View (cartoon, rainbow, N blue to C red):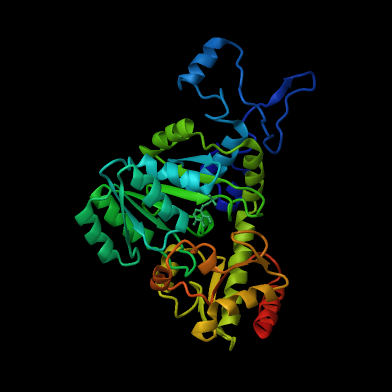
Length: 413
Ligand SMILES: Cc1ncc(COP(=O)(O)O)c(C=O)c1O
């Protein structure tokens, strides 16, 4: 959080947080003091000080400052402070930027001391690579992961009591059926049991929900998505307060998955328009979902704004809007589901076929062969990820252009 942030609203913080935080080089160069409006890209591996005693204190953590870029960098710190300011309005937590969402997720899990003999409880609907990270990487270190229906709070409470896990990991909004987790309810259970609640807020963003305010312990982001918003970088962020912040910082120093200053600068630039982008994306997604629902060649639409969404009530309570993702099933016979989905995607002319989300452009994917490719057909079916399912990450275009494109592809597929 930057000085003065505590009195400012979310949209204002998005624009100003992290910037203009001190005198920059140039002081004393004969042209007077100046403050760059946007934090420069500090492409410097090391940072020198007027005397070695200061370097000693900075390296020892007795004085705030920069020494070595794997530990800290002013451009990266500016981005981190901005994300921290948006995720944690109270200013008790710190944000740490990583080279990818997966590096951030790894650090968050490791910070809860998931070591040999420990158990992790994870939502069945987790992003595939997060589930694989838990099973393969943490599994190899002697951690057992149990997957559960995280939307059944009674079951979560039972499993937490039974298994005494060290961490519970969920996502604010799941992929691709857009189930909405009751973070408040989950936090009540984990707090009472002394278990760390880690929330991946990639799909939600602090615009829709701030899990730390609802009782979560650690927030994780793939900043590759909505936070940066333009599909031009890979980054991750962990936001955590004591005792997890110190562990995350130490893991990042030792494993070294830090974000570079160029990407941090670009991500920070993207973050400034998060409220504008998300506002428009949510509005557009609501419109797209409503229109798809009326289309005869669409069998089912998933969006938390719709009457028949299983978590509509939870979404109204825990999210400020229903989000920018929509998924839908094509109305086709079972045996031609995949072919039909491929034909539909190939018929799109404006929406971009790309396996990501959160960009200013509308993106479309086939979850069964992308995000859920690694799962067995049986597991996909159990999770409700049909071959006829399409996921849209709705962008900031004019909604009628997106809808026209979807309609022409629905006519032609
Ligand atoms: C919900 C979620 N979490 C984490 C990640 C991993 O992020 P990254 O690709 O930046 O490593 C993704 C990637 O798609 C994601 O969708």
